[in-house]
Length: 98
Image 1 (tube, helix red, strand yellow):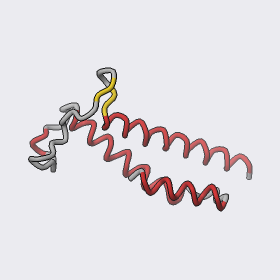
Image 2 (tube, helix red, strand yellow):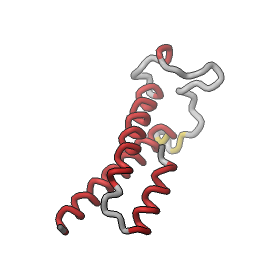
Image 3 (cartoon, rainbow, N blue to C red):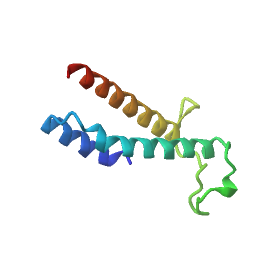
Image 4 (cartoon, rainbow, N blue to C red):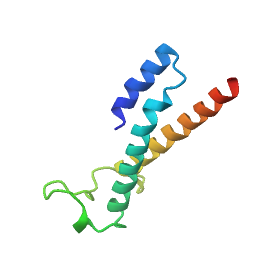
């Protein structure tokens, strides 16, 4: 998830730990995978009948949709992509300094 990343990045910033990516990448990749899967289900690229969604909480219900395209699954995917890009850039910058 995305919530533990807040604590990981906060500790990394406070301690000036340049190796924060070691702890963050597994969560970013897991979150990215889950967000991608949820988008595939949400946009009906994976049949809902083979997903683990429960009857009371369907994975494809539209709870929020801004401007006809921005949905919660899409925002989640964008967030994890953005965090991954920033983390990669941070890693590139710290490698140049050494």
